[in-house]
Length: 220
Ligand SMILES: *Cc1c(COP(=O)(O)O)cnc(C)c1O
Image (cartoon, rainbow, N blue to C red; front, side, top):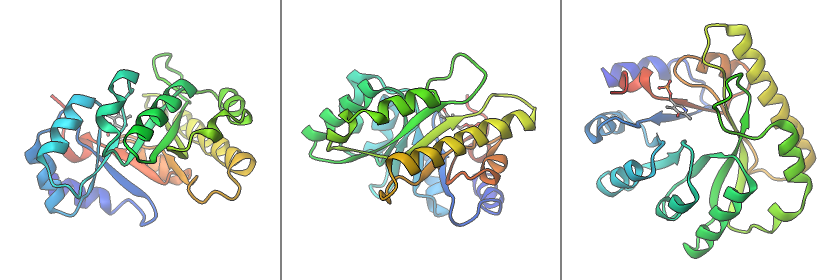
């Protein structure tokens, strides 16, 4: 099933868009099935689970952390993680920088923007992003690299609502790129789109989709 699902999804994803296979709550065997069909980028949302899978699975897997990261757990993933999607405060960004300095790495990060109607989703507003990037503090963080933005749309059947939210994220991305990263080729990722809305996201400029249940089935 996993191989068939991947086949279907791959057919809908253009070459310039990166697929993150969201494997949270799914077994190592499931991951290996996707791995054998060619996938190398996997996303996890819990530190313990990510570390456990990292230890046991092939070392050419590129692990993305897509959950809400607690400061005291950063050190466990910083030595190997390829991209942290959900950075939602300057405090977290500087804590990642501190851990990355110790690990002698530069860690790629995406700033999470709150675009959904739901109160529960983490992230900066457009104003807060502007406020943070206007200050110079983040520029002195030598061990994190801000590679773009990430966001989650409202969980709804209303396609227009979802499209509006992705448009807001894309517009904010373009504006921040122009103001703060005009010559920085690393600021290029717009992580938006999940199983239910990834085609809308791609239509609105996503460069990276995070897909779980459409690949691996429902999470138990
Ligand atoms: C779980 C999760 C996904 C994947 O969700 P699906 O609906 O299963 O595709 C994507 N992004 C984040 C941040 C998640 O937590």
